[in-house]
Length: 365
Ligand code: 5FU
Image 1 (cartoon, helix red, strand yellow):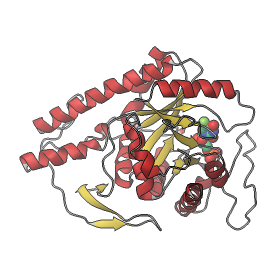
Image 2 (cartoon, helix red, strand yellow):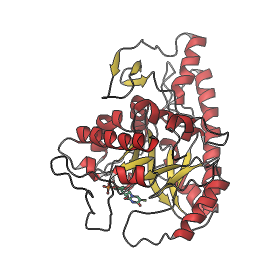
Image 3 (cartoon, protein in one colour):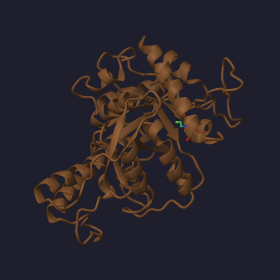
Image 4 (cartoon, helix red, strand yellow):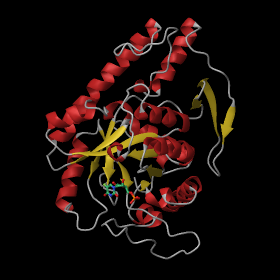
């Protein structure tokens, strides 16, 4: 897969995870292999930065537990708002939760509690310390959730009401249910054709064009709820990344550990999309795992250095996009402070997008 384009990998083999295919198409369409690690202090800032940086990224990574004022409301809370932004700009949400307990506990942590991660995060991840059942347990919970949510979309659309469980449907019906992900708008579109009145869809109102990426046009589903036409709806599938290697100094993930992660991934391709790792682990011809890589910074524009920035004084170790993508076969770079601490995070994200995309095109040649 190291020399295959993202577009080719999107259609590769029968067992490529549906969200992986979707993500690879998104990467190709947006000319981006950048993930923002949105580690900001409060929910307001998170939504602002997601909206600003959205056009440049394909994944937005969260740590919901470091965000002050995270609103847990299933329909109107922070997760739901992020889903709306994800649909608007075309990116996936990755909650970097690093689950790490017995199967029964992680199932409850994934679908329940206040955060209900499964409802707003397309992707989450695990530490493999507890053994492979952490993956199968989360896979089971994700499958159950998908079944339930698809059933709810069907019933809510045919009844002309939105989300039935919490009794918060709108009178006219057809409200976009943030819990059901971007697929809802598809269903609403179908419903619109059948009933004619559930939701009105206006034609293209604006377009958006990041530098040197394909033109994407968008339409307005209803006020403040815009959809890019060029990007298809994300599937309701949920995906998992296995944390196989870390960027921090002295971490305990040795080669044997990393291999065990790869082994579990291969046995659970229906749920595992790939890895958080420092290098590509794809070894067999049929491996099409996505490699997302944190510990990445570019040297400042005005004082470029050969090796980039070293670390943050707290164990974090940084490498350049070039080293990670060309040298180590990583697919998506994860960047937090490199973008967030810049005077203009929006412009800085664009600089990282370009650098990472250039590294990818170098790898292709
Ligand atoms: F799994 C890992 C890892 O090995 N290193 C990391 O840095 C995860 N991370 C996360 O990526 C970490 O929790 C931060 O959220 C982010 C890196 O942020 P930075 O500001 O770019 O250093």
